Image: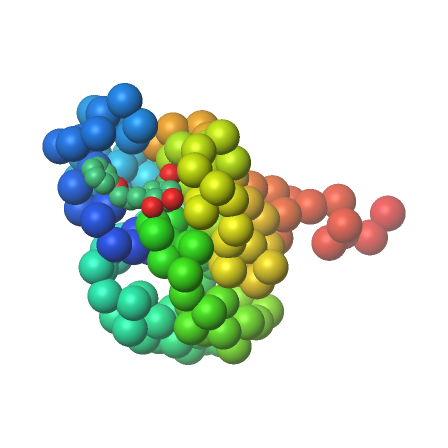
Length: 158
Ligand code: CA2
């Protein structure tokens, strides 16, 4: 069974424990569990990785590139946390593993929040973006990955 990799960046390990008005009551363990369950439903094994370290996320993206080249991985769903707004290194890592598809996902609607959250270094390198659907966004991003890179009309001959 092919895999989808779910990556979460800094502080997302705190999900469900603080700032519920912004991020809800669902914990990261809950998110990872329902992504795995959804993966079973749509026919993909789901691997999850969270780190508070930029370099660890970049290393995992490089590792994913080998999995992708071996035909073991469909793509990545990443919530880079605040690194979204600061990390050119993450941008370069995602560009560096093209054509491995990466969907950027944010729980909150970053565009309705502080101005410093409006810019993303990841978006120009992403194959798609899901913003503001709460933790359901991870599932929407997984479905988007499959629809765009497996079932898309654009990938099929008329
Ligand atoms: O909306 C999102 O998913 C964000 O990526 C979350 C990041 C934030 O910096 C981005 O601008 C938008 C923050 C992740 C930290 O999550 C926490 C969860 C609970 C308590 C504290 C932080």
